[in-house]
Length: 436
Image (cartoon, rainbow, N blue to C red; front, side, top):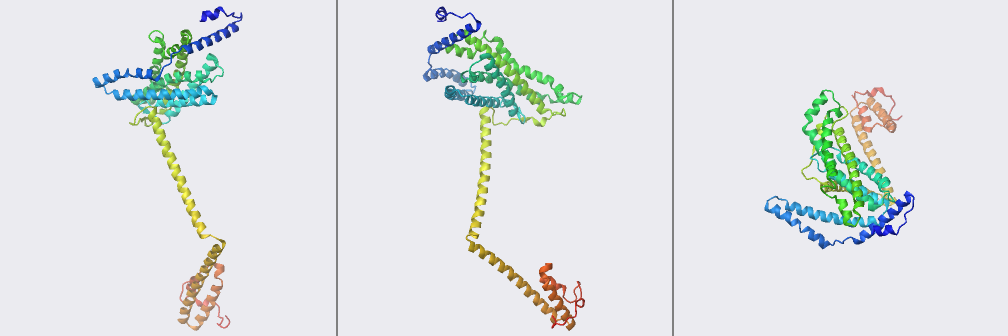
């Protein structure tokens, strides 16, 4: 078909003209290839799943105990990929930038959660650090690829952006997981050597240099091995999918080469960043190894599903606690409002409440005045005439000044009782009772 089209095309002399015509030719060939692609029905997928019975039979016969895990993994794979296919349909159809970037952020978050769920030991903040490193590396590399290599318009075109990002993240999380697992193990088992180097005056980077080198080599080796044997031992998955979809094999090979270079760059950046952040977090600025920051992973399990489950339970508890607090405050405020509305219902009831309160206050004053009068009567009966006159005069003056100085009537009676230590009745004037 290419030869047939070339025989009927007259290519312009300029290089840019030839490039544009070749791009149009590649698009026509890809369109014809899509029409020739074989439709795969759900029954065909079911027939492929029957091959897993071989694995299950071997597991049962050899007592490997993997048949349940195999069944769970097959069911999860089928459900997850089916849901992914139906999710990508509207994203590819609408092709809006915010929708593509939102799904890309979701992919990066899940990839970071999966990477930190595999190490046997963790530290506080590992998820945030891994999310930042993986997100930064993947974002930078995918933008470089879309703007300078593929040069698709618009640059966030979902058909190119999402599959490329998926290939990058799928291989990147493996390297990050290996790097984190190895560095946490090295800092746990080899802390004696690191503390010895720190005691001899080495900085935290000098004391952990060999540790980080071993971890980085171990994490980056799978990517290098994959690049070395690709095209000789195996045909990579992306190239196989494009060939099965009808793409020209030469064009599929170029896409696969580009993807491998993007994977290698992203993996290197993410692994180096995650390992360095782990070392800088566990060894503080005073160049001390803080072993207490290394926390063993809970025995509940690992994987992104356990992380999602834990975050869901934690969020549910937080929301429930907040809801209970809000409901309690509403009940308290509603109860206070009901009591206030019952007491102050109508202006007449409020006025009557104030009047009753004033009457009770006056009655208390009258009762106190009667008590003081009776006490004075008892004192006067037992005193002489001169003392009685002085006592009556002093008590009258004290009662008249009670509102000004704030003294109670009981204190006044105690003050003018004969024989009191506060003063004598002879200290007051000698006015007769008739003058009072």
